[in-house]
Each structure stands twice: as C-alpha cells, then as structure tokens.
Image (cartoon, rainbow, N blue to C red; front, side, top):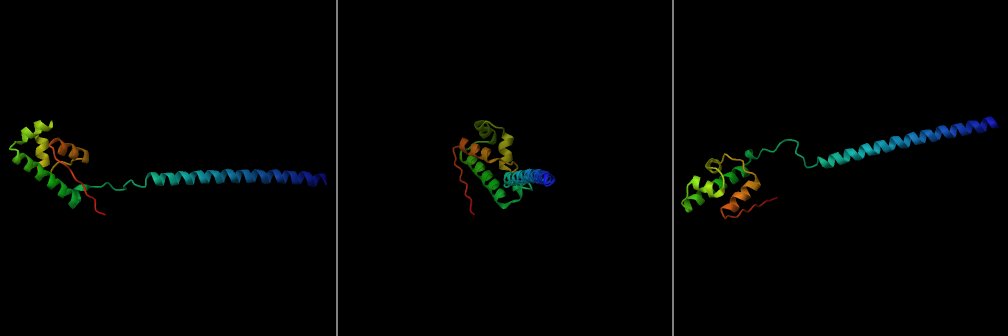
Length: 127
C-alpha cells in the first residue's frame, strides 16, 4: 500500500508539472497572438505601396488650379514673380515652380501660401 501511495503521489506531481508546463505554453502562445494582433492594428493604415499622387487626375487638377490662381493673383495685382516672392518671403524660383506645376506642395505649404496672399482654401472629399 505504501508503494501505491508513493506511486500516486509521484504521478500527481508529474501531472501537476505537466499542467504547469501546458499553462505556461498556453500563456506564451496567447501573448504571441496578442502581440501579432497589436502589430496588425499598428500596421492597419500603413500603405504597403507608396502613394504617388502625381499619377492621379485630382492631384494634377489641384496643381493646375493653384498655378492658375497664383498667375491670376499676380496679373490682377500687377506684380511680378520677384515682387510676389519677396512679399511671401520665398524665392522667385519657388513661385515659378508652382506656376509651372513642377512643385509638389504639401498641404501645409499650400495653406500657408494661400493665407499669406489673403485667399482661402476649400477642400472637398466625396466618398
């Protein structure tokens, strides 16, 4: 009987160890899955391929509109490119690049430029 009791106790210990190892593995697997889910969420809005706005009709239209408005502003106010550049605190080449639609303006630059010449900017998104 003593042998049976020691065998049962030994078996209980082994089973306990197996359960603990299983629980540790399960926790590690759950942590790994949670990290993978977090990584998926972090990358959810990251484009896999870089966006090239120069290929889109809308981008070209905005460049064309900005160039036309800038030229119209200069003509209406009878000022040259160098004079406008001086007023805006930039170079004549910068203004010329915008008018030739060669400059990739950021939204911040566009807003800043429009505000400096006393204009307003409207952006509409149609989904």
